[in-house]
Image 1 (cartoon, helix red, strand yellow):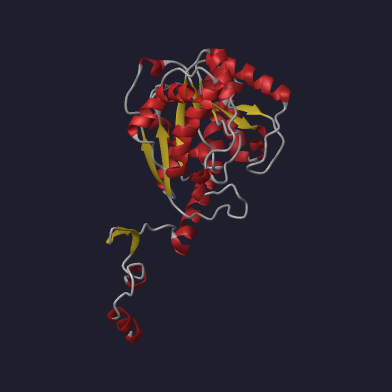
Image 2 (cartoon, rainbow, N blue to C red; image 1 turned 30 degrees about the vertical axis):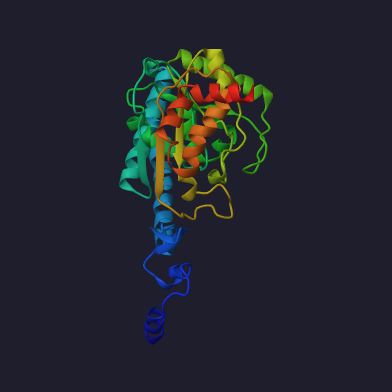
Length: 338
């Protein structure tokens, strides 16, 4: 106590030393023209106890999903085997049940603090079948998409997600994905950040399944990064233009979603894994923008819109966001390049 008292009585020798003298959470962040600006230091991290509690809640949620999904989906499977419902009905019922389980289990086991941001306006294309694209940074992403689906896409068509077939090694995801009719694609197992190697025949099968899904009244969900991004703060992984190819082939518009913070719960890097550093997760759904005319335009727009949100948890400035969604920013970039 005497040491602290003596320290506080000593005036700071320089403006920069003020941040070491004041211990109330304030730091100097700008010294210009002799004027010192002070800002509140942002707290980062849950602390050991908070991280452990969040981890326990997350594991309990996943265990509950693994238990509840078989119990709730078995009756649907029996109805299908008895041919009382069609295959399409089975998939739609299963998707509703999966979304219901994820939504209510997250409410009962609030291991995450979820914020949803809906589109600011609607357009005439909102009612059209479309292709949804989203970033991908955690194994939890699909559960957050299911849990927020009703709020963000209320009254929209059911969504079939294209996924890596090896995810079927997990019992919970295998039951959910196969019962919902999600579309698998085969590729070699790789580490986050490594190049994807797809099975060509599997890709052809995927395109056929997508066409069938559209005919049956589903929307399609694609993760253009193709794998988990271990460092979304540094930007997106190399993007694949398959979403644009599907859009052009099916004449369906592309809609964008974005996730932020999921990797801070369950990180794709095995050395970090289930060591939560934050409970805050944001899920953003964007309004339908201008028709995308090329694969390059899709990559640029997705990078600016979704990449920014995934890295920061915040949108671009409103004017920039609107201009990327309506295509003006892309046209301006093309003009600059020419």
